[in-house]
Length: 581
Image 1 (cartoon, rainbow, N blue to C red):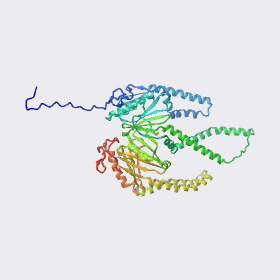
Image 2 (image 1 turned 30 degrees about the vertical axis):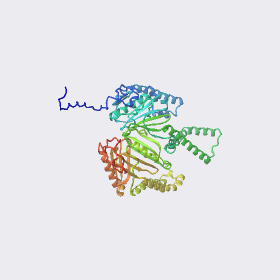
Image 3 (image 1 turned 135 degrees about the horizontal axis):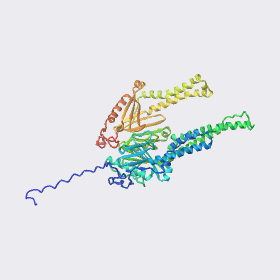
Image 4 (image 1 turned 90 degrees about the horizontal axis):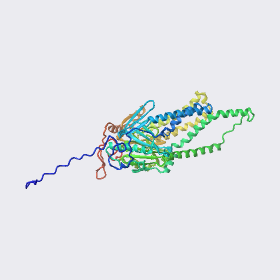
């Protein structure tokens, strides 16, 4: 009906309110039986894990860790070593047959499922065990492909939570590689949905390492080789050779003694053999050969383990891939990052390199709870930190500790040297069998430990430092190996201040900042009492608040705000740029 003259037509009805769809679908992600939001992850492998599944049949053999197999066979082998060979072989075959039957039963009784909300694993032959992992508690998901597993298109998947300590929460050995990638993608999509964010780079079957993301770091092969010859792997071969030679000597020694006695009885050897001293040339050649073999072994192990090391960022996750014959692909959520450690031994300091360890809340022992960058030029450390810790430009400014800390360092280093010197000089007077020419020869040289340890104490004191910004706290210590630990302040869960009798006299305090994860601890050693009290109060505010407050900072000559809101959600992602500590 037309409106009357002089009146306005009625306004159109307001549009119906449009609310954003709740993307936190607890029933499961794409790949777990429920379609997800339309994004780039639609190209990810779609598989349904809601129904219980068994592992691949090859897991009966390939699912046995090598260390576990060696431990299972070493007892029957050693127990029957003095028996006839046929008995040793019979016992080993019996153990293998029984173990095979147990493995087959375990494979039939072990199932897993994932409904988008909970990952469930049932296992056990005589005693049934049921394990449930909420997807929101999962910290790391790692795919491991051994050399033999890769030949058959198989892989193992490890799922870890913040409570993982001595072993991963779930270790599925082994699955078809496509299923392992799809399960990891399903877990990641569910976590993204629960966090209210979308994903744009989910790994697919053709790209299991997540190459669709942005490359953060790639370690060239020359750095992997250099890391192998300047690290602890150089000591692997001498230890193995020493143990092997000792074992061989213990086994063939009695046979050699018996052979010599028979030769003496037959008149083929004199009863008083001539003993000559060692040939120094042979010793030098043997030492050089051992050094060459040690370097070669360290390089081979390092290249096979860390070759093709690269880190890519896909959405808010780090995808870490490494290895040549045996590969490992780990996914570490940036919001779960707890601690970053920068380590430089004396050789790497001289060459200008460092090793970076990235710790997250989850992770089992044995090195799997952290991601270790084998080698990185010192000048690139700050750039990597800016990638790992949002709005952090690098290592914050560190403040040196007071001179009283030097006295503590001298005490720590000179005390064991003095005890060793006293033992070497006094014990031979009390214990007769220690009174030998060798001990008497070594006694004067033990005094060299005092000046050497004193120099190391001075080096440690000069390295002691700590610093803090509104976003991170950092501490540095060490003498032969310098370690700098950096933790987001919102990840600090508890604080401990320690003051021994001597520290109280010197006005020093050791502060321990506890973060989630096995062995994740930031130690401020021998700081000034007032500095430690201020740092303790600053970190306590964050540790006690479920939603820590990060102060805003004006940045630039114009005084513009230097970031987003001062409120922090505790995830370690976002907030303000770091100010100098």
